[in-house]
Image (cartoon, rainbow, N blue to C red; front, side, top):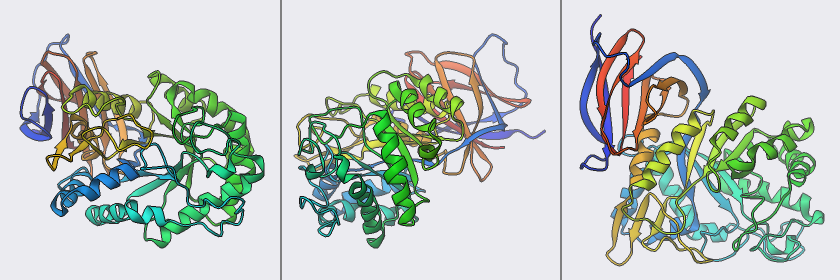
Length: 450
């Protein structure tokens, strides 16, 4: 049997390698000690279909993008969206109304009592968000899947009359709020931006100092069943992928049970979105799949909070570990938070800072690519939409692995090593074996044809 070549792309802390091509290896019949490390992959054993990878369009990201030179603007969008030279982002998020990474609180309809939404407008989105999104579409060369998430209804629809610091949707405005999602989707489509899905509410159990709105499990169930689901159908938007929860893994099982065990509510719901804050609780995601296997799982937000963490390597490693563990627990896609923040981790209308894969140094007018950008690329560039996760297992705790088979017949195996030691291992596929080394503090993607 002729040897099969395996292409290797690597990012490693202690080298200059950043999504760099390494020396290819070849499958053969090499001997390897039984007790030594190995990674097994079987492309014939297939699991969930992957929707894609991407990040969020936030007003903060768009404002930073507008501060760049035209050359930098084009470079950054190519880095994220170009399928040949960049990550080929294919699944993205957009906030409906303001979020914490907006320049201020705002809503598309701020006229109190306007239950017919006569004053509804996307004028705020036209300032920065829509120009960035349209240029991103041009860089991608084809439509990406976009889902929308609200942080808060307009203040006048809430029990607190404030967008920030929690509060709830007033019962008398449930129908109006359901129609609001439809107006937003329809408005985007008129702008040439298609919408693939939506979440009911960002972080519905968190009273934040920024834009937030609280739903108990029963309240979210009832809103979906009695208002949002039927309204989407009435407006001809029933094909949108409706997701519940959009909050942390820790209480995902609780929320899933409350909504999925109600057949009338569950029939409107495509799946569950989740985040990585609070406890890790990776196995809660597997439990949701095992209990309700007909419902999808999508990672909808994650970032390092508290600072921009410029130059930090652990940020990228957290991305790598989370993506591997989430994919191995039936997640169909993974969406980062802000695409571009400044050197202070903003702007953010409530103060505070977070990290982003790309940082704009406003003072020196430079663009910095962070470790998280490169780690994301090891998945987004090689595990393409429509691929299927395949059986992949490691014999060594220090080698964290996942794999997928693309529609073109290529297989991508991603191997993460977060230790301070290089690890030799055998990549086994069927009756063939390729020998390799995973450098310390590195991530590598091995691709070959089945």
